[in-house]
Length: 116
Image (tube, rainbow, N blue to C red; front, top):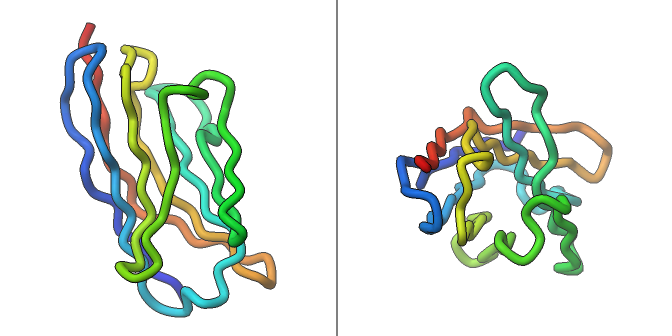
């Protein structure tokens, strides 16, 4: 079992920045991949960024150059630094852990609202 708790969401004006955090606990040594997803109102949940155990990263085209995924293993925390925010970045942001055996665990989400 892995527990994930997101924080750091809030309201920000377009062009501003936010840093989301995802605190991890439980069997975190068996996590293979971690992702950030977001879900805009009335839309499906979309992949935003991925970080692998070798620290390679991938980003959705819509956030490349603006968002950075990272993690601090000493603090058992995943981050998403979001800069130059746009109204279309509004949504609930979720972190997800994929275990070495393929199971997924999700956090409860944190709301990000970008006002134009």
